[in-house]
Amino acid sequence: MISNTKLILLIILFTLAQRPIETASNRSFPASFKFGIATSAHQIEGAWNEDGKGENIWDHICHTNPDYIDNGDNADLACDSYHKYKEDVAMLKDLGVNYYRFSLSWSRIIPLGIAGSPVNPAGIVYYQNLLQELIDNDIEPLVTIYCWDLPETVEEYGGFPNPEFEEHFAYYVRVVFQNFGHLVKYWITFNEPLESCYQGYGTGTMAPGYSHSGLTDYKCAHNIIKAHAKAYHVYDEEFRTQQQGSVGIVLDTSWYEPATGGAADVEASERALQFAFGWYMHPIAFGNYPPVMVERIDQRSEQQGFNTSRLPKFTEDEIEYIKGTYDFLAINTYTTVYAQAREEYDIDVISWDSDMNVDMFLDDSWEETGSSWLRVVPWGIRKLLNWLSKTYNNPEIFITENGVSDKDGLQDDQRINFFREYLSNVLDAVLDDGVNVTRYTAWSLMDNFEWQRGFSEKFGLYHVDFEDPERSRTPKASAEYYAQVIATRCLVDVCD
Image (cartoon, rainbow, N blue to C red):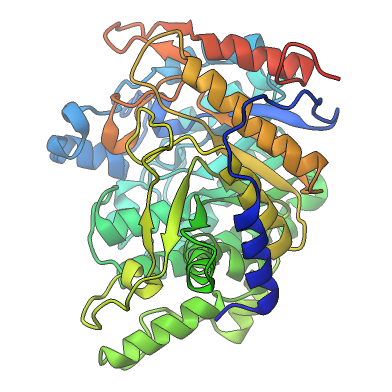
């Protein structure tokens, strides 16, 4: 059950106006608000086996099972950013972004990935060069240490579900902080662990492709949370005094809109938010999993005949060690879905979905995009930001990914409208609701390898010609619009 306070909050959020924005806000973003853009290593770098880089789980699954990816695509060359990083920085400079969020390739830095194994000097030099190029162009680095590309050797050692993962990650982050910490003030430990665990070990729709939902995905999450806390403490105890940086984790969620204003659907909405976002953030903020997860999974596990809960337990020492290990709250969010109460799943069904027990669906009236899962629902982001602020005691919030896919073409009007309307809701959350959002990060700088969808979905503000060996880049109309927003801090032609 959820508290009366949270129930009232969710009913208020449900009753907020849901009409599409007809006119974007004509108010200016605060002078302190920062705008950036994001990519990730595996999606853009290419050079998959050059200069000592090791194999990662996406290299492995693309090469051993090409049918796993749309059109048999792979990221062997991707956008060729390994060789074209200066061109990337020039595009960033043209946009006028305050910062660039990118990720490091673990297997480029430590080819085997495991604790104690050799560091690759060429990988260190590549990222030092990229970081210096950014700084020389007055672009702040926001660095993600891990984004979905686990070294294959670490996976063969048992991957995230292996309790030894924490030590492999701690070894990696020390190498990262030692070599790049003098150039970086903002660190992100993991990107979207929900997807790494739920899709990678639960549904099998992401590498490494295992389908053991309700079991292995919980072990995966448990060890990632502990590894994140370990990385935070490593930085705090060994590097923070000298380097003076900040550390967080990027979590993702949609806004789960109650299907009706009834108490059962409102409670289903809160349960979905706790099972998706709270699964990771609740331990990091408060020390343990959300009570609704603990209660439901413990109960269903017992009814299914398990001797212990399928949801692993933190020790009291671990709870204290994990609690408070974030300097900012970072969120990737794209869309909204409806959440509806449903009859309990059959007790024989073992999965994260059956443990959560919420029906989810899209509204057919919501604008479609280049991705089947992504509808344009601008009001959802304001509701989500309010929920985050109230649930986690008004933390500083970074929006670290938000964007929309197109099928192709340079005149991407839908993306311009998407940015205008979503940013208008972000601005309303900041100016009217008092939510402490300080950064907005567009996804993505350029079209790239979109995981299982290969090159078929295009999120870039810059078009990449994947038929051209040179991977030529061309700005779309949205690049000009986003540059104008950054320069003027205004979503329309003239702000008050």
